[in-house]
Figure 1 (cartoon, rainbow, N blue to C red):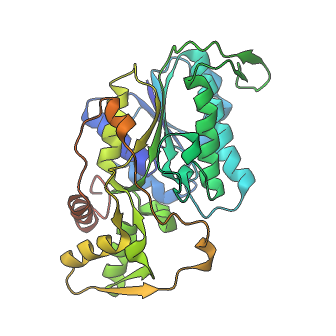
Figure 2: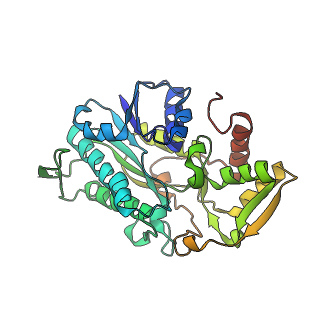
Figure 3: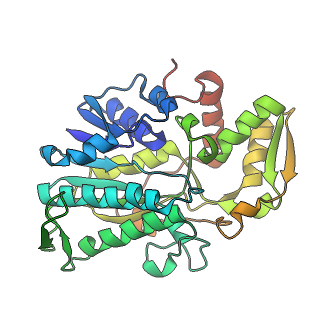
Length: 334
């Protein structure tokens, strides 16, 4: 069996969809449907069962005969200010899952984030000297990556032998199972309707055009440049490591071809020629917490053997716009 945490979310549901396409249906989806909009992400997908994330963590000892866990579940709200909640949900839950995988020889591929690089003053390499998180979300991802590194680097390190957090053991350093962290850059594509404020710029611009025929950009958006990557490319990277169980490590997942927010608006304007672009003041709440530039260094990913060409921004946006026009932004029309 395969477990996908966050399987009702944006990237998780796209991953389940791809697994179905390659003939895999023996999937346990772990998520929370407190946000009931996520239910529509599951429509049309084939999976064995669904379990709430809290029930999963509380009963984790029962899940031993598992091939791999794709750990996509997390609070991705970069504006969340409750550090206690963020650290428990993103860091502590992830450590529990990792310890369970180590104890039961289960492969683990988990979602990290480009947010760990902060303002990117020291580049975007998978090295600690490049990392400087600017908010609690980024810090939760950064801390778990550092926890994982201790196992990847064969260091002797204490970890919890049991999920009750009572028994410690020294990790032997033997790589008996795959351990992969994927640092997602700015992902966009179908199945993100439930994300609301945290949905991609493409999603927001599309809805602004439909509702007001006007896209609202922060002043200076021509200088706000990010590495935008289409969700299908992110899924292809996950499947690559799934098909190569001998490969472990932490890898950047971006195109290494950053573009401005203004460029996105211009691509959408080319499709909706009666739309306009309006510039609005940069919000005070984001000052000092906003990544103005990201660009993935993908040398390590390429060295691992992933040689797919990435979807261009123009192609990806127009493909996504077609989903939004025809399928309301979902993979499967309901």
